Length: 366
Ligand code: NDP
Image 1 (tube, rainbow, N blue to C red):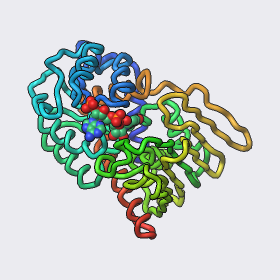
Image 2: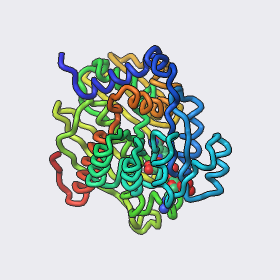
Image 3: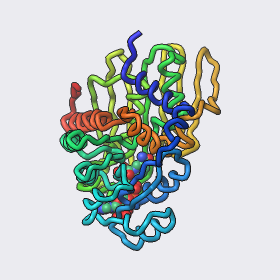
């Protein structure tokens, strides 16, 4: 049977999970060095502590606009002072042999610039989601990495999260039968109007550019298909000071070639984190679906409900370590990361179509 692209992704993830491969590659090899660009919430509180869980990766440089914060962080993680950069001195990273990968964890509209500058400095790039704020930027990022002969991976951590991996495996194994529909909804209450996430120039859009990426990704990895059409509508109270520049709630429907439909939603005015796949024999449900931890998975078939409490371990001690080490292993083996720049570009193409559909009030064929 011919394997689909998604099946290949899952196979790749499973192969990377095999402990013997990890040990063989670790032997005699130094850990790959990451430069963290942007010491904000995610970089500082989520990613940096995760290097302790990595087998193949370590932090070797920091890039920040706040020198005092960078110095304190460097002291905490054993990064030498000579490996601290500002946004102005960032390009000097080319001369730092301890840096293999630049990890861009900046506001969305800065992803393209720092990915391209990193590639020009001869470094591989891990870039946070959304990959960028437009298809054109994604294409420029892919081209820059290709020209420099460097790899580009997107921080789609759910591809390394054990419950999401198990949900994908169950969906592909036919546990719920033929897929009929997916519901995928993500949001949180954004309270502070001053946040960059609510500024169009920095975020590129509203909830769709943030939590909507999880809804969209899950719709694609749960069905294992690429959508052929999208229909969207938006609901935003523009008199609310939080939403003068970007959307609050946006809902969209994706049609897939098999006939399956995904109903997706993102919002900055309600807390939701849920993915449901319904097939003609049963269901696969994640709630919460894509959090940093505490995700839960259920299956239901023939009236029998079951919680999957311990899925097989993912490729890493945590989804974050799995993601960081996946890039390191990809560099050693020469394999493309399972969530490459092309994967980020696919999402941005759909994101642009969602905005176009909501604006024009019509279905967009993809
Ligand atoms: P924060 O606002 O907490 O941090 C962003 C950091 O970027 C700042 O602390 C600052 O670092 C740097 N920065 C540089 N220029 C600016 C600017 N003009 N305005 C604001 N910050 C600036 O954001 P997050 O860490 O939450 O998000 C960063 C990226 O990571 C986003 O793209 C987001 O989508 C992604 N993300 C991904 C998550 C995931 O689960 N995969 C979760 C959370 C975020 P410094 O002070 O060091 O210069």
